[in-house]
Image (cartoon, rainbow, N blue to C red; front, side):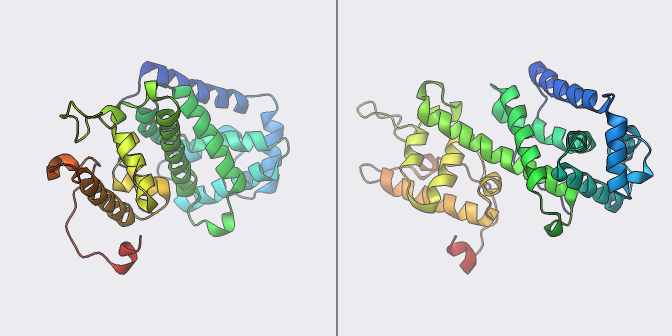
Length: 286
């Protein structure tokens, strides 16, 4: 499975974010080091022939998280059996969840770093959201429909965290205008007119109707591009790009009713550059 390219800003974590993420790791490690772990791990081994190859939980984690040259199909089967143990419930379920967490720690850590940029004011809230989403995905994962367990768990978790972040920023922008994201305060195309109130970027996006409204709000609130918006909405990047293009045309038309509008300044929704081409029928109907 090819890696999913995300339009997330790369950067280092703040000290508070590093500490919060490290605290979660220490909590998971303590749960694995608990006195009850050997007995519960024996129960998991009894349920899974492939997990039974490993005598202790630490040996299993050394293979899952540290052995970069390990066979991916074998790892996938190990994760699938751990998911089944977590879904079965019982005293072994918390241990299965902890093993899944630490085994997938590199991928989940990368997702956390990418998302932390958009949750600078609430790293603990991001961790709580990520934890709840990951736990929910494990609980409802239908293994009969999944080809790559590892990719599905990590990618689905980040996808849902993206959606939660977009909804969080939108909620803050609407309910608490005094602490709205900085993106909403960008000058609008009418900012040079002192005789008329200056509409915020959010207000312009909120005025859009139809399927173009949600992508426009996400572009305004989080400064997202088409590919990132497509992940949040569960649509194709081409469809997200098309909807943003229609939203831009609508805004130009609305803003030009009272005065001429410069084309560059009317392009207030961020767009990713790409080659021009004829749209397919499916994209035209997006």
